Image 1 (cartoon, rainbow, N blue to C red):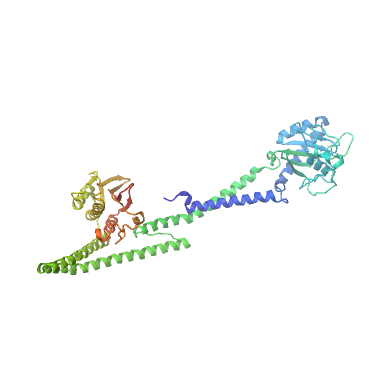
Image 2 (image 1 turned 135 degrees about the vertical axis):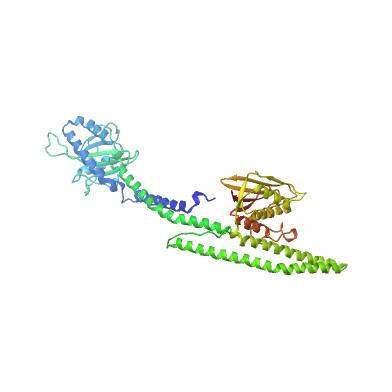
Length: 502
């Protein structure tokens, strides 16, 4: 039985999802290792708008309060937005108690941003520090810092972007900054001030950018792709499944199959080719069997006359000549037996379409076959419910059972009892003939029902048979609208199973 994971449908869908994963992995590597591309650049506009709106509200609250209250105001707004806010002035830093220290690179870059013209800055890389700036190797304390970075401000660099984005390490934090207007009683003009939003998450808990819309879009794209791909894949795989089943039936010798695929693509052409091949094979096999029947029929009369003549000749000869005639008669008898088998085989096949099936009790047929083929030295055990009936032809089914029992008696009669059992299951009657003989090599099981096939060396002409017995069994059973199969038993033995309708 085919595993679900090995079907063409599963493989195509696996390749589809693998393709999506590879695209996602390529984008991730691109953003991770390409210094000119930053996720914040990609999503930063959303964060800029939110920070600008939050900055205006914070600036309003700060302008209405005393500097001693600014840290508390920053903490209150941070709790609302799910981030921490830091206010950096020219010579002072305000941040909530949740932040114990500020990284030196954040102070350095923020002070640099305050000195620039415009409303903010955007720095791609953190500034490089020299050994001379040894004081920057210390982090600023959590209280307000004065003159923390006056002596080591970099040269001014102008930027076209009105925001500051950076990342610090140990611990990893993400910083998003914008300038806000702050006024004092002594200065009518706004003093330089930078508001930073900081978070341990790259999304800022949804404040820098909200990944949910992107996830929804990705899920929608995936869903639409799956909805488009599944009908396409099924449109390819379903006809292939039907053609596979038809090919399996053809391989079993059943040529009464037809594939209907009204399509003009390669699959439709393949279906038409299989139908044409099936028709040609059926005609070839039918012609072959008709030829065998005709040859057997034509040979029947000459062989009978030869047998009669040899019998008369044997009575008139004496001594060694009689032995020679007997040897010739044995060969003629073998030829006569072959002709009879050929006639039985061809008649069973050629008359299958005209056979009328009827409901018959199975037990009497089996008992008749046992009486015909059984011997006193072989024990045949029949285990069949007298009420079991099958839809078949009595003559054909008896002939099939007789051939099976004849083989079992001949090749396994001395190794143990032969069992004939039957059961009803799912509206079918399953008849099994089992023995304890040597069985058949596994490589020969598929060819066992082919005409003129004899497994070597255990079954050859010296032990009897011309290789038509099992072929006749299959022809008779198929004519009764049934199936037949053979298998080896464990640890030893052989079994032939016939399945018929009830």
